[in-house]
Each structure stands twice: as C-alpha cells, then as structure tokens.
Image (cartoon, rainbow, N blue to C red; front, side, top):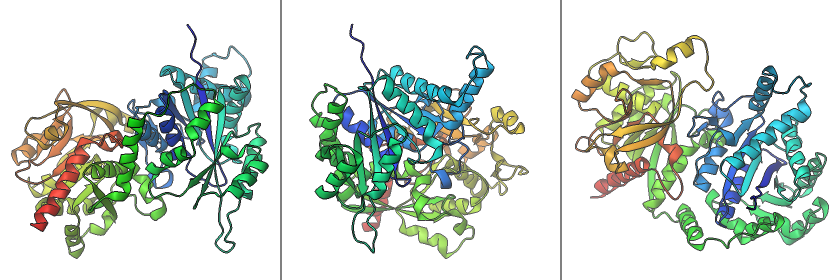
Amino acid sequence: MHKKQTKYIFVVGGVISGVGKGITSSSLGLILKNRGLNVTAIKIDPYINVDAGTMNPTEHGEVFVLKDGDETDQDMGNYERFLDISLTKENYMTTGRIYKTVIEKERNLEYKGKCVEVVPHIPLEVIRRITKAGKDVQADIVIVEIGGTIGEYQNMLFLEAARMMKLSSPKDVIFVMVSYLPTPQKVGEMKTKPTQHAVRTLNASGIQPDILIARADVNLDQKRKEKLSLFCNMSVDKVISAPDVESIYDIPINFEKEKLSDKLCEILNIVSKKTNIQAWQKWKNFAKHAHNGKEILKIAMVGKYFETGNFILSDSYLSVIEAIKYSSYVQNKKPIITWLNSSDFEKFGNKLKELKKYDGIIIPGGFGARGVEGNLNVIKFARENKIPYFGLCYGMQMMVIEYARNVLGLKDANTREVNPKSKNMVIDIMESQKEILKNNIYGGSMRLGEYKAILRDNTLAKKAYNKKEIIERHRHRYEVNPAFIGDLEAKGLIFSGRSPDGHLMEIAELLENQHPFFLGTQFHPEFLAHPLSPHPLFTAFIKACIGKINNKNK
C-alpha cells in the first residue's frame, strides 16, 4: 500500500506583529479543506511560558482551552472555528514547553549520555512534535504558524526546525510569508521596501518564501506585485493581495479570488479534488451575514479586562464576541457590542439605568476581586428589569452570589476568591484545588478541558440543547457550594445542568415564567461556537434579546 506523504505549510510574519498570521493560517486551512484535504494546524508561540494559562489576557489576548484542557493562544480558537475541528495539546507548543521537554528527557537519560545542545536538539524536538501532530490525525496537510516577526531572536530556533524539515523533504515543505506594506499618510504611496527586507532576513535563515501574502489597507496593484516578485525572488502570481476587509470571514473568499488553493496544491504537487461547491457556498452565505444584518442587537459586555484601551479590548474575549456573531447572523441580526467596565457600576444610580437601552447583557469569565460589586449590581438590575442575562463561568458565580444576597437574604454571601472570611461562602474552592493552591501551584492546575453534564427536563438549558447529556469545556477553580443548593433552589434558582455524579453545578437559571433569559454556565460555551454551527445557548440568548425588542415594539 502506498504510504501517504504529509505536506507542511509554515506561515511566518514580516515587518510588524499582529499582521494576521493566525487568520491567514486558518483561511489557508479552510480553502484546502474545501478541496477534500484533511488539514490540521499548529501554533508555535515563542514565549518561555509553558502554556498561555498564566498570561494576562490584556497583554496576550484570550486564553483558549482545548478539549484536553491545554491552555493555549487565541489563534488555536481561530483554527478550530475556521476548520470546524477539535485540536489537542499536540497542536500547540511554546519555547518553554520545548525546553522543558528536552531537559526532562536529558534528566531521564533519553539522550543516552550525549551532550545535549540547543542545536540540533531543540529544533529536533520541534520537528518531532510537528510530525506527530500530523500523524495522529493522518493529515494531508499540516499548517504551522510560527509566532512573532521575522528578525526576532525568539523564533530563530523554530525557523531552524522548519529549515531542517525543508532540507530533508524539499517537495513536502513550503513557506508562506504574511507581510505588511505600509502607505505613509504624508507620502501617499504604498511601500514595498520593508517587506523586501523581511524576505532578505528570512533568506538569512536559509528559507525562501514560496507564497507572499501582501497585507495592506488596499489592494496591491500590478506594479508592486512585479516589484515584490523581482526583489523577493518569486513569480508574480505567487504574490497574493490581502487588503483590509470588514470581516475576517471574507479573507478565505478573497484568497480564492486569486486561486490560492490551486497555487498551493501546485507547489506541493497535490492531486486534490475541485472545491466543494456546496460547502463553499455555505461559507460565503455565512460571510454575507457580517455585512447584511437587517436589525441591530445592542449587547452590553460587562467585564474586568477593559483597561488597556480599544486596541486590545476584543482580544480578551475573542471567542465570546465571535459566538455572539454566529448566533446573531443565523437570526439575520447584526450585534453591536458595547464594552462596559464593571467598576463603573459599583454604586446604584443613573449609570445602572443606562442598562435598559441594551437588548441583552453578558458577564464573561474573569478572576479576582476588582469590579465584583459592580458585577453584582448589574446582575441584580438585569434580573429585576427582565433584561436577558448570560453569565459565563465567573458570570455564573456572580449570578449565584447576587441571588443568595438579594433573594435568599444572605447579605454577606460571597466567593472565597474575593472574601475568604465570609460566613456564607456560596462559591467555594474545589476540594481538589486546596492543596494545589497551598503549594502555590498555579499553571495548568485548574479544572480544565471537557466534562460531561446532565440537563434537567423542562428548563431553558434542556430546551436550547434539545438533549439530555452535553460535553463542554471548563477553566476554573471555584464551584457552587453544595451546602447552599437546596436553599437556592427553594427560592427559585434552578440548577439545570449538573455533573453526572450530581455534585457540581454546571448551569444555573430562572425558569421562563420568571425571566425571559437569566442563565449562567460554569463552563465556557464560547469555545464550542463555530461559524456554521452556532452554540445553542448563545442562540437562545440572542433569541431572548430579539424577544425583548419585539415586546418593546408592541
């Protein structure tokens, strides 16, 4: 039997950070998958951190949790959403993770007494992980995004690994560079020189890009394509224009306008099927919704990580934002998300009354004590004024505390995370976490990854999912204290989703005859929302928001 030869596409970035390597990698994966190819993706982060779990979201962006519990970079979420697949820890690596593995192998005598060196042993470990990720899923193509920008010291060893792979299998490895072409305002002319230098710098690592994705605010003209072709040593047709677009979901469509999947298959000598027209049309129809929503939905996002300005704001809650979009687009609505800092609602007053103008309120995940009282005030206002409310992880814990304080009458109800001296600890540390925190072990130590839950009949949750058992992804240390569950349910707060053993509360809600949508999840449903398969709870929330509009217009 002929052994299938896996192909590898390395995606690197030039000139500036944030040039769009992750979305480019996701888009390449999508257009190749639509050619009938089995595609997987890998992200390489140059950080010394072993994973993304200990990084501040305002600096690094959202921590995306995989099904096996690995805490990763937000680009892993883009891969899963575009490719409609589930990835594992084999698809993510950092400098810290690679060095840690190599050192552990050395300590275990796995190198049989050899002198272990940065080169070749670090690049060889990178190569081992890349090839294993492809082999595990029998991939036709593995797309590998190398984080950082060409010329940085941090990603040199990953480039060396890529060079070594190209050397050993030249027909199976190609390179795509995503680079930026600025148009200085006072000059008024698009400049190719920074990209030329970036390609030369990549050449110094022994690598020549096969495809150049030219990022700019407008389409690349033929003259600049020819200039880049000449000075970057590639044919004109391998220079792909990638102008700014209104929606990231237009990017694969733009790539196919330049027949990029044909070019990739040609370079890699892949005999693929023609593009799956039906699947491709579904994507294009979805992408149209980003532009054609007939009615606006006003969603308030109340959170903690909003203090570094608008440039990083969306990255802290990227999966939540996208989940809102997917469920809104299905309803032919365009969501407008307003960012509200929870600290601004510490006191009752006119600020809280402003919440009435929103069709729905979301409190997403978070950690720590800052802004807690503001969150509780927002939740109370949403509950009493029948504004659809959706609490995610921390947002559910706050919802339970608010209900315990203002309905159950436990005025000092709290979470151990905020006030360890409270007499009514309705949210408490998990037993399995107590020893971990006592020994100051934080990285990768929370309740992480996929867990099952059983849904209760005749509830919002059961109606939304339309099934009895669900599997969702988690990232938290604290749980609803079982000692208070009976009293809370006696006062109307229903725990409609529980762990199979009944000990852990996964979903809390008020029934529809009490509130149009007042629901919180201990898990993170946003991690399983995909463009062509929106998450059922987000869809139920969006429908409730639409219901609020309809009731107002009656």
